[in-house]
Length: 307
Image 1 (tube, rainbow, N blue to C red):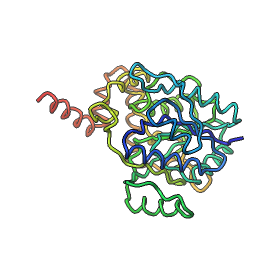
Image 2: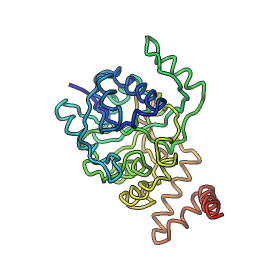
Image 3: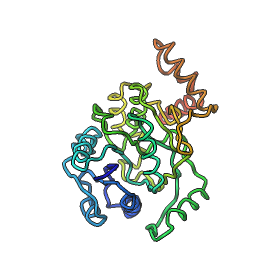
């Protein structure tokens, strides 16, 4: 019986660096207590990696016309598997994220405090160019060096979502690995009234840095054409503006607390207020008022493409 089911759709294991960081991540998951690990898809080298690491592999995930897994199918497969393992919590996670026991401990404590919720956090970006040494004390060594690089990712990045399996039963056919779906996850939770809990103060989640050579043209995922479809399925640009700044709680010291008011969080509140009051205005106008720097960058990007 597992307490938590982790599921992910890794990238192909054809690129040596991607293969290495994915093995690092998945290996860290296998060392967690009371956790079941599911790898979904038919990417190159995935079946072999699953056997090597001793985790479950499910091939029959539905994909879009380009062969990229759909979030809706991933959720359904994980939910079905959790019925067999009697796991009450699910967690979708990117296959480059290293987890440590503090992650499971936070999940267990939050599950005692709330029935419906989504747990997320900021990540520590870290350059790793070799397989991790998982001998005794590896967690402390990794935390120390990750903190030493001092690269806590901004609140816009969400690389995992942990939730009771009673939540997110109606996920659209988003494409994994493209922008928009993760923001929608936060929007959906806020819309349903589920607590959105930021556990950044209580856990260390390590992201292994990589390039985007696995994507067409080496473009970042937010510039990929499938992102436009994700945005459409999410209900438009306004619904993919949600980030960790929209969390309703923080998990600190074993307790839930309200988020601290910071300037970015305050401005996010202003943006939501403006969108609610001036719902009849084009999103571009609200964007220009609430996020002037981002809007200027977007305009400059368009100008550069045309020149």
